[in-house]
Length: 300
Image 1 (cartoon, rainbow, N blue to C red):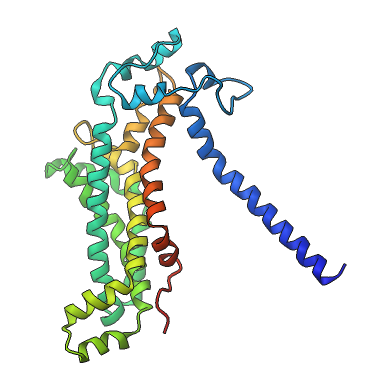
Image 2: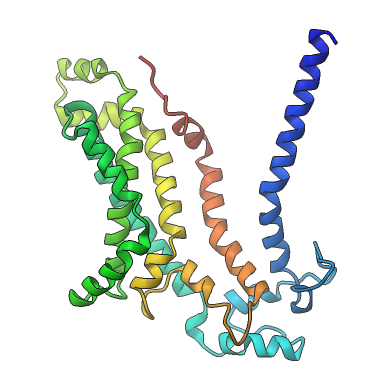
């Protein structure tokens, strides 16, 4: 077998493996979308129904709409009665809570992280050991701090408040923000900043008009990465919120219970609503993400 044939076989094998991996990754997304359009009797059908012949928007109307879902069977009535009868279970308030909390916490984390990252990169305000310790703190499982936080938040009246979740999300994501942004600042030659100062720019003007525009793609990538973390966080939100402030991941968990079982169609419809905003944002800023996650916008 000559070299050209080996190269072709390797190329075919590589694309075949990529195709298989793409199917494995995409199938759960397809299954969630498919289930969101299925009537209740197809949720547990065997053999499984991959795409319903009676697809409808009933699950979306039941979850996101104001009207009650069509009553197709006694079992469906039993499973969904509690959810349909209580307006607080509608996810619109949870959607607003998630948007407000996630965007605010992410913006604060990225802003403070960028300032700290610049100080670490240019002035070594934190040693390598301190930076490593900062990252190790983030590796602590959330369940370890959930119980103490619950007691502390109860004492200072931050339980079940948006401010409480914003603070805890800001603190837990700040190490990621510092580490990611620092890698982008390190890629910008210090000579560019010095040249701007020689031309008469102040330190703040050099940072604002030279450094930050050059690492804009990295900041966008960091922002989306942390937004995904805060948007999908479940455990801390579950422990630190009760009724007034419920995020979408906690709302998603309400569609199951020991008595009613899992309402798969409603869960899938809500999951699509949770995932869709991040997908839309990713599509619009994909150019910044491709550049940002390469960790190399400016080369020396």
